[in-house]
Length: 126
Image 1 (cartoon, helix red, strand yellow):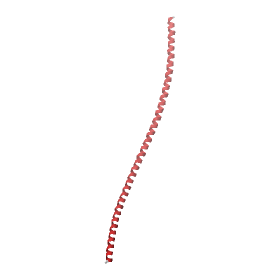
Image 2 (image 1 turned 30 degrees about the vertical axis):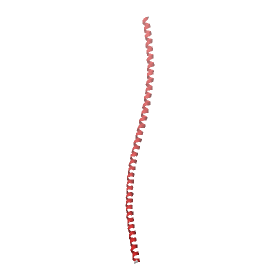
Image 3 (image 1 turned 45 degrees about the horizontal axis):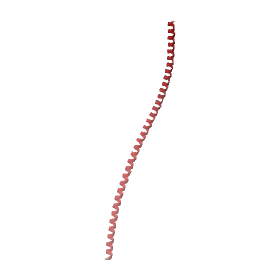
Image 4 (image 1 turned 60 degrees about the vertical axis):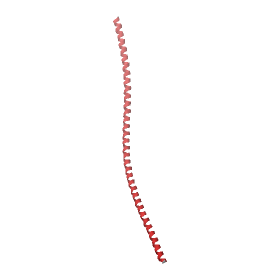
């Protein structure tokens, strides 16, 4: 009877250990499934983020090209405006010089006319 009870007891222990092993196996399988899903989710997120990064890099490159084009246009406009301002300044100086020359000639003509009037007046008086 002692061997029989030991055998029964051993079988019960084995069954309990098998149940525990099966429970642990189920827990491990569930954990593996969960980990696999987490890995797949992380990989999908990484692919999505990589796509977003590539898209943002393209947008950034287009903006850089746009800024460079605007900078080039602004530089050309500044050069043109500077040239126009210098040309206008040179024209103003030239016109001022012509005006001064014209005023001098005008003053000389007025003096000449006044002198001729004076001579004419003296000639009439005689």
